Amino acid sequence: MTESTMWVEKYRPTKLSAIINQKEIIGSLRSLLKNTPEMPHLLFSGSAGVGKTTASLCLAREILGDSWREYTLELNASDERGINMVRDRVKKFARFSGLDTRIPFKLVILDEADEMTSDAQTALRRIIEDTARHCRFIIIANNISKIIEPLQSRCAVFKFTRISEDDVISYLEEICKKEKVKYNEDGLNTIYSYSEGDMRHSINILQATASLGTVDESNVKASAGLAKTNDVGEILKLALAGKLSEARNKMIELIKVYGMSESDFLKYLNEACYKLKTAHLSEILESIAKYDYRLIIGTNPEIQLSALLAELGKIGK
Image (cartoon, rainbow, N blue to C red; front, side, top):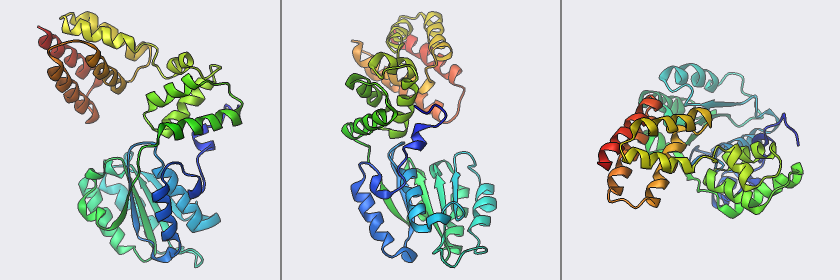
């Protein structure tokens, strides 16, 4: 097992034909490659870890050959969300200068473009129009509804589907065999349950678990921070009983000592609600959804989760 290499990159497909579970999309992209100069701008949407970025990089290799790195600009739009990123980096790269005559066009891959501001997307639309003769854009988004309509209308849209459990587990088995890692079915099933079809996340968990020894259920739970998930149900009961300080202390311990993320805490809290026989289920779920949204928009996690526990205490009265 090679400790210094990230398996998610080591086993990332380099050809469209090797991409898992997206046969219709791959077939359509291959059709576009039959007349590369006429290829439109592309918009890839779908949940995390289903092959959007991998498909983009495979296209770059197949279109640009050995020069793909030189003539491809790959940006994560969530890191640089504003209009300056569009004006400075994208506009400079998309200019005609330096284009090899053997290359049909330059390629710009904008990952997580749904995190870009509306102004930045509007500026991007103008650049796409101005550089269409010698540049193509692949826009990648988890949530297509956050991409402005003028951008969507200028692209061929491909919606990637979630990868099936059988396909994820089969690919994880293949990696285990190549890396000579011991595993069992329960371990791989636990990885899939936790990653929910996100292939990238599944491979990262697999590599982390392999460092502990056999990829079995207990080691997967330990490496993925799942060993204390039952405590989330206890926190829910304490909060509903009005024992706010005790519930908060246990929550802080889960997050800061055992490494459970705030989003995972809410996920397991949501699951615990259905196991708890309570007449207040709808109110509890509504509160969880409200605080989940607050975390997404960037509020302080500890303050928000503490407020959630206080709200659960009021519901439980």
